[in-house]
Length: 360
Image (cartoon, rainbow, N blue to C red; front, side, top):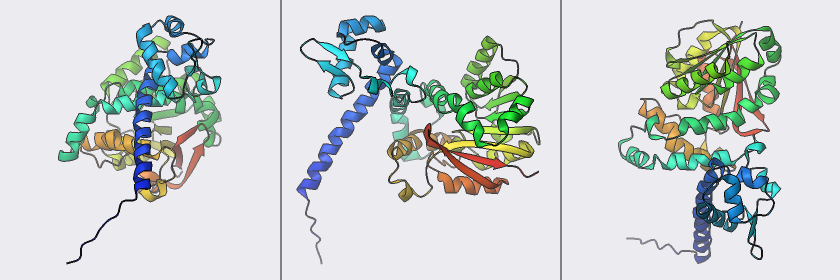
Protein backbone atom coordinates (compact mmCIF):
# COMPACT_ATOMS: atom_id res chain seq x y z
CA UNK A 1 0.00 0.00 0.00
CA UNK A 2 1.39 3.37 -1.05
CA UNK A 3 0.71 6.49 1.01
CA UNK A 4 0.85 9.86 -0.71
CA UNK A 5 2.08 12.68 1.47
CA UNK A 6 1.17 16.21 0.41
CA UNK A 7 3.42 18.97 1.67
CA UNK A 8 1.81 22.37 1.97
CA UNK A 9 3.69 25.38 0.63
CA UNK A 10 3.36 27.88 3.46
CA UNK A 11 4.00 30.91 1.26
CA UNK A 12 1.26 29.87 -1.17
CA UNK A 13 -1.14 29.34 1.73
CA UNK A 14 -0.31 32.76 3.13
CA UNK A 15 -0.85 34.50 -0.20
CA UNK A 16 -4.22 32.79 -0.60
CA UNK A 17 -5.23 33.78 2.91
CA UNK A 18 -4.36 37.40 2.11
CA UNK A 19 -6.37 37.18 -1.09
CA UNK A 20 -9.34 35.82 0.87
CA UNK A 21 -9.18 38.79 3.21
CA UNK A 22 -9.23 41.06 0.15
CA UNK A 23 -12.25 39.23 -1.27
CA UNK A 24 -14.15 39.74 1.99
CA UNK A 25 -13.25 43.42 2.03
CA UNK A 26 -14.20 43.92 -1.62
CA UNK A 27 -17.53 42.13 -1.20
CA UNK A 28 -18.27 44.38 1.76
CA UNK A 29 -17.35 47.46 -0.24
CA UNK A 30 -19.66 46.39 -3.06
CA UNK A 31 -22.58 46.44 -0.61
CA UNK A 32 -21.59 49.86 0.71
CA UNK A 33 -21.11 51.22 -2.81
CA UNK A 34 -24.60 50.03 -3.65
CA UNK A 35 -25.89 51.98 -0.66
CA UNK A 36 -23.86 54.99 -1.76
CA UNK A 37 -25.61 54.83 -5.12
CA UNK A 38 -29.13 54.21 -3.83
CA UNK A 39 -28.95 56.97 -1.21
CA UNK A 40 -27.40 59.48 -3.62
CA UNK A 41 -24.30 59.90 -1.45
CA UNK A 42 -21.88 59.61 -4.36
CA UNK A 43 -23.91 62.14 -6.35
CA UNK A 44 -23.93 64.59 -3.45
CA UNK A 45 -20.23 64.22 -2.68
CA UNK A 46 -19.26 64.77 -6.31
CA UNK A 47 -20.44 68.39 -6.01
CA UNK A 48 -19.17 69.09 -2.50
CA UNK A 49 -15.82 70.54 -1.53
CA UNK A 50 -13.97 68.60 1.20
CA UNK A 51 -16.64 68.35 3.90
CA UNK A 52 -17.41 66.90 7.32
CA UNK A 53 -19.69 63.91 7.78
CA UNK A 54 -22.36 66.26 9.10
CA UNK A 55 -22.13 68.48 6.01
CA UNK A 56 -22.29 65.48 3.68
CA UNK A 57 -25.31 64.07 5.51
CA UNK A 58 -27.06 67.42 5.33
CA UNK A 59 -26.39 67.78 1.59
CA UNK A 60 -27.72 64.26 0.94
CA UNK A 61 -30.60 64.71 3.43
CA UNK A 62 -29.56 61.60 5.35
CA UNK A 63 -28.87 60.60 8.96
CA UNK A 64 -25.38 61.72 10.00
CA UNK A 65 -24.61 58.63 12.11
CA UNK A 66 -25.24 56.28 9.22
CA UNK A 67 -23.34 58.50 6.81
CA UNK A 68 -20.35 58.61 9.16
CA UNK A 69 -20.19 54.80 9.39
CA UNK A 70 -20.56 54.50 5.63
CA UNK A 71 -17.71 56.96 5.18
CA UNK A 72 -15.58 54.70 7.38
CA UNK A 73 -15.96 51.92 4.84
CA UNK A 74 -15.33 54.28 1.94
CA UNK A 75 -12.15 55.74 3.46
CA UNK A 76 -10.63 52.43 4.56
CA UNK A 77 -11.58 51.01 1.16
CA UNK A 78 -9.69 53.88 -0.52
CA UNK A 79 -12.75 55.15 -2.36
CA UNK A 80 -13.12 58.41 -0.43
CA UNK A 81 -10.17 60.52 0.81
CA UNK A 82 -10.00 61.72 4.42
CA UNK A 83 -8.01 64.54 6.04
CA UNK A 84 -7.69 63.61 9.71
CA UNK A 85 -6.51 67.11 10.66
CA UNK A 86 -9.64 68.86 9.38
CA UNK A 87 -12.06 65.91 9.57
CA UNK A 88 -12.98 66.48 5.92
CA UNK A 89 -13.98 63.81 3.42
CA UNK A 90 -13.58 64.15 -0.35
CA UNK A 91 -14.62 62.04 -3.34
CA UNK A 92 -11.91 62.45 -6.01
CA UNK A 93 -13.21 63.39 -9.43
CA UNK A 94 -11.40 60.35 -10.86
CA UNK A 95 -13.49 58.10 -8.59
CA UNK A 96 -16.71 60.00 -9.22
CA UNK A 97 -16.22 59.20 -12.92
CA UNK A 98 -17.20 55.58 -12.11
CA UNK A 99 -19.68 56.14 -9.28
CA UNK A 100 -22.22 58.86 -10.05
CA UNK A 101 -25.39 59.04 -12.09
CA UNK A 102 -23.84 61.83 -14.11
CA UNK A 103 -21.09 59.39 -15.15
CA UNK A 104 -23.58 57.08 -16.89
CA UNK A 105 -23.06 54.87 -18.90
CA UNK A 106 -19.87 54.37 -16.87
CA UNK A 107 -21.54 54.34 -13.45
CA UNK A 108 -20.30 51.05 -11.97
CA UNK A 109 -22.09 51.73 -8.70
CA UNK A 110 -25.25 50.60 -10.52
CA UNK A 111 -23.72 47.16 -11.01
CA UNK A 112 -22.77 46.78 -7.34
CA UNK A 113 -26.50 46.52 -6.56
CA UNK A 114 -26.50 42.97 -7.93
CA UNK A 115 -24.55 41.72 -4.92
CA UNK A 116 -27.42 42.53 -2.57
CA UNK A 117 -30.03 41.26 -5.03
CA UNK A 118 -28.26 37.90 -5.30
CA UNK A 119 -27.55 37.67 -1.58
CA UNK A 120 -31.26 38.03 -0.87
CA UNK A 121 -31.87 34.77 -2.70
CA UNK A 122 -28.94 32.88 -1.18
CA UNK A 123 -31.06 30.57 1.01
CA UNK A 124 -33.19 29.54 -1.95
CA UNK A 125 -30.11 28.98 -4.12
CA UNK A 126 -28.48 26.84 -1.43
CA UNK A 127 -31.61 24.69 -1.33
CA UNK A 128 -31.50 24.45 -5.14
CA UNK A 129 -28.00 22.97 -4.92
CA UNK A 130 -29.70 19.98 -3.26
CA UNK A 131 -32.96 19.65 -5.22
CA UNK A 132 -31.75 21.06 -8.57
CA UNK A 133 -35.05 22.64 -9.54
CA UNK A 134 -33.89 26.24 -9.68
CA UNK A 135 -35.19 29.42 -8.04
CA UNK A 136 -38.10 31.50 -9.34
CA UNK A 137 -37.93 35.20 -10.17
CA UNK A 138 -40.02 35.99 -7.10
CA UNK A 139 -37.02 35.24 -4.85
CA UNK A 140 -35.05 38.18 -6.26
CA UNK A 141 -36.16 41.42 -4.65
CA UNK A 142 -35.52 44.55 -6.71
CA UNK A 143 -34.46 42.46 -9.72
CA UNK A 144 -36.58 44.37 -12.23
CA UNK A 145 -35.61 47.76 -10.79
CA UNK A 146 -31.88 47.02 -10.95
CA UNK A 147 -32.18 45.38 -14.36
CA UNK A 148 -33.97 48.45 -15.71
CA UNK A 149 -31.25 50.73 -14.35
CA UNK A 150 -28.49 48.51 -15.74
CA UNK A 151 -30.21 48.36 -19.12
CA UNK A 152 -30.57 52.14 -19.13
CA UNK A 153 -26.78 52.35 -19.16
CA UNK A 154 -25.75 49.49 -21.42
CA UNK A 155 -28.68 49.54 -23.84
CA UNK A 156 -30.85 52.65 -23.80
CA UNK A 157 -28.13 55.28 -23.62
CA UNK A 158 -26.08 53.56 -26.30
CA UNK A 159 -28.85 52.73 -28.77
CA UNK A 160 -28.57 55.60 -31.24
CA UNK A 161 -24.82 56.15 -31.10
CA UNK A 162 -23.46 52.63 -30.69
CA UNK A 163 -25.94 49.77 -31.09
CA UNK A 164 -28.17 50.65 -34.04
CA UNK A 165 -25.20 51.55 -36.30
CA UNK A 166 -24.08 47.91 -36.06
CA UNK A 167 -26.75 47.22 -38.69
CA UNK A 168 -26.01 49.23 -41.86
CA UNK A 169 -28.96 51.36 -42.95
CA UNK A 170 -31.07 50.51 -39.90
CA UNK A 171 -31.41 54.08 -38.63
CA UNK A 172 -32.66 55.23 -42.04
CA UNK A 173 -35.21 52.42 -42.08
CA UNK A 174 -36.40 53.32 -38.59
CA UNK A 175 -36.80 56.93 -39.61
CA UNK A 176 -38.91 55.93 -42.61
CA UNK A 177 -41.03 53.56 -40.52
CA UNK A 178 -40.79 49.83 -39.74
CA UNK A 179 -42.31 47.31 -37.29
CA UNK A 180 -40.10 46.41 -34.32
CA UNK A 181 -40.42 43.80 -31.55
CA UNK A 182 -38.36 43.78 -28.34
CA UNK A 183 -38.54 40.35 -26.68
CA UNK A 184 -38.25 39.99 -22.90
CA UNK A 185 -38.47 43.78 -22.83
CA UNK A 186 -38.83 44.21 -19.06
CA UNK A 187 -40.48 47.55 -18.41
CA UNK A 188 -39.84 48.59 -22.01
CA UNK A 189 -37.25 51.34 -21.63
CA UNK A 190 -35.52 50.47 -24.89
CA UNK A 191 -38.81 50.37 -26.81
CA UNK A 192 -39.90 53.70 -25.34
CA UNK A 193 -36.62 55.37 -26.21
CA UNK A 194 -36.80 54.05 -29.76
CA UNK A 195 -40.45 55.04 -30.04
CA UNK A 196 -39.70 58.64 -29.13
CA UNK A 197 -36.66 58.75 -31.42
CA UNK A 198 -38.43 57.22 -34.43
CA UNK A 199 -42.09 58.36 -34.48
CA UNK A 200 -42.75 56.80 -37.90
CA UNK A 201 -41.94 53.28 -36.66
CA UNK A 202 -44.12 50.99 -34.53
CA UNK A 203 -42.72 49.22 -31.46
CA UNK A 204 -44.02 46.27 -29.47
CA UNK A 205 -42.46 44.89 -26.31
CA UNK A 206 -43.31 41.51 -24.81
CA UNK A 207 -42.39 40.20 -21.37
CA UNK A 208 -43.66 37.45 -19.09
CA UNK A 209 -43.46 39.56 -15.91
CA UNK A 210 -46.70 41.20 -14.78
CA UNK A 211 -44.72 43.60 -12.59
CA UNK A 212 -42.48 44.78 -15.43
CA UNK A 213 -45.30 45.10 -17.97
CA UNK A 214 -47.50 47.07 -15.56
CA UNK A 215 -44.65 49.47 -14.82
CA UNK A 216 -43.90 49.88 -18.51
CA UNK A 217 -47.50 50.57 -19.47
CA UNK A 218 -47.73 53.21 -16.77
CA UNK A 219 -44.61 54.92 -18.08
CA UNK A 220 -45.88 54.83 -21.67
CA UNK A 221 -49.11 56.47 -20.53
CA UNK A 222 -47.32 59.11 -18.47
CA UNK A 223 -45.03 59.99 -21.36
CA UNK A 224 -47.88 59.81 -23.89
CA UNK A 225 -45.94 57.64 -26.32
CA UNK A 226 -48.37 56.54 -29.02
CA UNK A 227 -46.25 54.21 -31.16
CA UNK A 228 -45.18 51.80 -28.38
CA UNK A 229 -47.17 48.94 -26.88
CA UNK A 230 -46.12 46.41 -24.22
CA UNK A 231 -47.88 43.07 -23.89
CA UNK A 232 -47.55 40.31 -21.35
CA UNK A 233 -46.78 36.88 -22.70
CA UNK A 234 -44.35 34.03 -23.22
CA UNK A 235 -42.07 34.76 -26.18
CA UNK A 236 -41.90 31.03 -26.89
CA UNK A 237 -45.61 31.16 -27.79
CA UNK A 238 -45.37 34.05 -30.26
CA UNK A 239 -47.48 33.40 -33.36
CA UNK A 240 -46.73 36.51 -35.40
CA UNK A 241 -45.17 35.03 -38.51
CA UNK A 242 -43.54 37.45 -40.99
CA UNK A 243 -44.64 40.46 -38.89
CA UNK A 244 -41.51 42.43 -37.99
CA UNK A 245 -38.64 44.10 -39.80
CA UNK A 246 -36.49 44.19 -36.66
CA UNK A 247 -36.50 42.08 -33.47
CA UNK A 248 -34.26 42.85 -30.52
CA UNK A 249 -33.35 40.87 -27.40
CA UNK A 250 -31.17 42.51 -24.77
CA UNK A 251 -29.53 40.11 -22.27
CA UNK A 252 -32.59 37.90 -22.39
CA UNK A 253 -32.21 34.69 -24.39
CA UNK A 254 -30.03 32.76 -21.93
CA UNK A 255 -32.64 33.23 -19.16
CA UNK A 256 -35.47 31.64 -21.14
CA UNK A 257 -37.19 28.41 -20.17
CA UNK A 258 -37.29 27.42 -23.86
CA UNK A 259 -34.47 29.35 -25.53
CA UNK A 260 -34.34 27.20 -28.68
CA UNK A 261 -38.09 27.63 -29.12
CA UNK A 262 -37.80 31.39 -28.52
CA UNK A 263 -35.14 31.72 -31.23
CA UNK A 264 -37.26 29.68 -33.64
CA UNK A 265 -40.29 31.90 -33.00
CA UNK A 266 -38.15 35.02 -33.45
CA UNK A 267 -37.00 33.68 -36.82
CA UNK A 268 -40.61 32.99 -37.82
CA UNK A 269 -41.79 36.43 -36.66
CA UNK A 270 -39.26 38.25 -38.85
CA UNK A 271 -40.20 39.29 -42.33
CA UNK A 272 -37.86 38.06 -45.09
CA UNK A 273 -34.78 40.28 -44.94
CA UNK A 274 -35.58 41.21 -41.34
CA UNK A 275 -32.88 41.60 -38.70
CA UNK A 276 -32.52 39.98 -35.31
CA UNK A 277 -30.23 42.03 -33.03
CA UNK A 278 -29.30 40.06 -29.92
CA UNK A 279 -27.22 41.38 -27.04
CA UNK A 280 -25.91 38.70 -24.71
CA UNK A 281 -23.09 38.11 -22.26
CA UNK A 282 -19.55 38.30 -23.66
CA UNK A 283 -18.34 34.85 -22.74
CA UNK A 284 -17.12 31.71 -24.43
CA UNK A 285 -18.79 28.32 -24.08
CA UNK A 286 -15.62 26.60 -22.86
CA UNK A 287 -14.87 27.79 -19.32
CA UNK A 288 -11.12 27.52 -19.98
CA UNK A 289 -11.47 30.28 -22.58
CA UNK A 290 -12.84 32.68 -19.94
CA UNK A 291 -9.91 32.50 -17.52
CA UNK A 292 -8.67 35.99 -18.38
CA UNK A 293 -12.08 37.64 -18.45
CA UNK A 294 -12.04 40.71 -16.21
CA UNK A 295 -15.60 40.08 -14.98
CA UNK A 296 -15.71 36.30 -15.40
CA UNK A 297 -16.12 35.53 -11.66
CA UNK A 298 -18.98 38.03 -11.46
CA UNK A 299 -20.69 36.63 -14.55
CA UNK A 300 -20.43 33.00 -13.36
CA UNK A 301 -21.85 34.12 -10.00
CA UNK A 302 -24.74 35.90 -11.73
CA UNK A 303 -25.30 32.78 -13.81
CA UNK A 304 -25.27 30.34 -10.90
CA UNK A 305 -27.35 32.48 -8.56
CA UNK A 306 -29.84 33.86 -11.08
CA UNK A 307 -29.71 33.26 -14.84
CA UNK A 308 -29.27 29.48 -14.79
CA UNK A 309 -31.51 29.10 -11.78
CA UNK A 310 -34.57 30.98 -13.05
CA UNK A 311 -34.47 28.97 -16.28
CA UNK A 312 -34.30 25.69 -14.32
CA UNK A 313 -37.16 26.85 -12.09
CA UNK A 314 -39.34 27.29 -15.17
CA UNK A 315 -38.45 23.83 -16.45
CA UNK A 316 -35.80 25.13 -18.83
CA UNK A 317 -32.30 23.87 -19.72
CA UNK A 318 -30.53 26.40 -17.48
CA UNK A 319 -28.18 27.71 -20.18
CA UNK A 320 -26.83 30.32 -17.79
CA UNK A 321 -25.29 33.68 -18.57
CA UNK A 322 -22.05 32.02 -19.67
CA UNK A 323 -23.62 29.81 -22.34
CA UNK A 324 -21.04 31.43 -24.61
CA UNK A 325 -20.58 32.60 -28.14
CA UNK A 326 -20.11 29.12 -29.63
CA UNK A 327 -23.37 27.74 -28.24
CA UNK A 328 -25.22 30.95 -29.10
CA UNK A 329 -24.12 30.68 -32.73
CA UNK A 330 -25.10 26.99 -32.85
CA UNK A 331 -28.57 27.77 -31.53
CA UNK A 332 -29.04 30.70 -33.90
CA UNK A 333 -28.09 28.42 -36.79
CA UNK A 334 -30.54 25.75 -35.59
CA UNK A 335 -33.28 28.41 -35.59
CA UNK A 336 -32.55 29.17 -39.27
CA UNK A 337 -30.12 32.08 -39.16
CA UNK A 338 -26.96 31.97 -41.28
CA UNK A 339 -23.95 34.26 -41.56
CA UNK A 340 -24.40 35.72 -38.05
CA UNK A 341 -21.98 38.54 -37.15
CA UNK A 342 -20.71 38.98 -33.59
CA UNK A 343 -19.62 42.47 -32.55
CA UNK A 344 -18.29 44.15 -29.41
CA UNK A 345 -18.75 47.76 -28.32
CA UNK A 346 -16.35 49.88 -26.22
CA UNK A 347 -19.14 51.24 -23.99
CA UNK A 348 -20.33 47.73 -23.08
CA UNK A 349 -17.50 45.29 -22.24
CA UNK A 350 -19.96 42.84 -20.64
CA UNK A 351 -21.86 41.89 -23.83
CA UNK A 352 -21.54 40.61 -27.37
CA UNK A 353 -23.90 41.82 -30.11
CA UNK A 354 -25.17 39.22 -32.57
CA UNK A 355 -26.57 40.48 -35.89
CA UNK A 356 -28.63 37.87 -37.75
CA UNK A 357 -30.61 38.41 -40.96
CA UNK A 358 -33.50 36.23 -42.15
CA UNK A 359 -32.92 35.34 -45.80
CA UNK A 360 -35.14 37.19 -48.27
